Length: 70
Image (cartoon, rainbow, N blue to C red; front, side, top):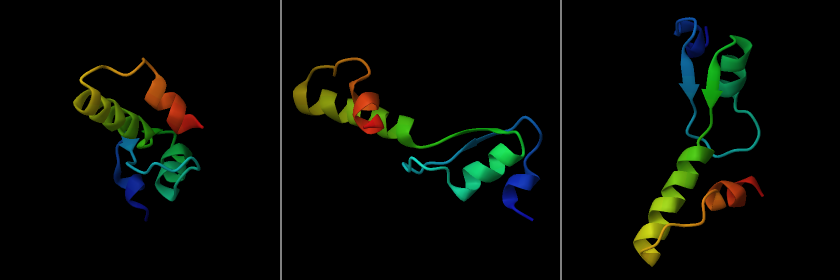
């Protein structure tokens, strides 16, 4: 039995993978009708934090998300 089957109905799944294609975990969650997110949002947040540290300024809003989406 896949581990996602042990989650209660209405659970959310967070997969920390940066891949653009769905992972097996994401496909399993989707098959159960569960909400899921990948790690690209976390990667963008880390990029924003690093930008602030390096340049002592906030990056343009949405810049990191836009770069990851390319």
